[in-house]
Length: 291
Image (cartoon, rainbow, N blue to C red; front, side):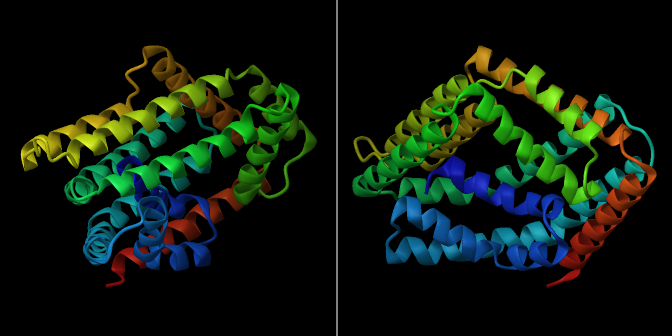
């Protein structure tokens, strides 16, 4: 029931429309509230009353997202589709990223009251359970990203980048794989820095939850809402200026790489990407119209 991860999961659910095959999107989205519930429960070990309340609030949040936000997601996909038919620039790609981030910010703001209420009701044993879960997932992340050699990490990132690109363009040519390889080699991804930020976020979350669930003295509703909102702001915009600058640079680098790859696409690859985006747009509109 980590608030940041609650919101992160909900945001990821919304973003599925941009990333997966259409039939998988519909299945995942239509079951998103239940999937979110089980994921949150694995972190928080909810009691019966919390479970009932969370299920109801997640269902309401999903219904709001379907009617209010999914049409906007469809419009963003339409804009992306129209841009995909021609060459693009890093600035255009980053503009789309900024719009996507804005949609996620709207979702986060909508989820804040429910997350606050849930956090205020957490018992000490539940926070301890959450801390153990966070320690486990952090250890797994450390093993996955800091133990391998830099060459192995670059190879893993390249495989991920190729897999994602081929969802849209189909099989990449060797020159395009080389483009991605060179871009990854030039980017300043630093696993140690990311691990440090992850640890900071975990401690920030635990401290915030202990404050919100405190009974000595018990914070009021407005104080709790402000505390959670401040935590979310720190989650979205790290108070560590070095990490924040690093993260923003990674986004800029990704926009540049995306533009370079798209501009390298053959006519057939570009047409395939446009068809994919059109299918995603149609899927989003279908989801928005479903009640």
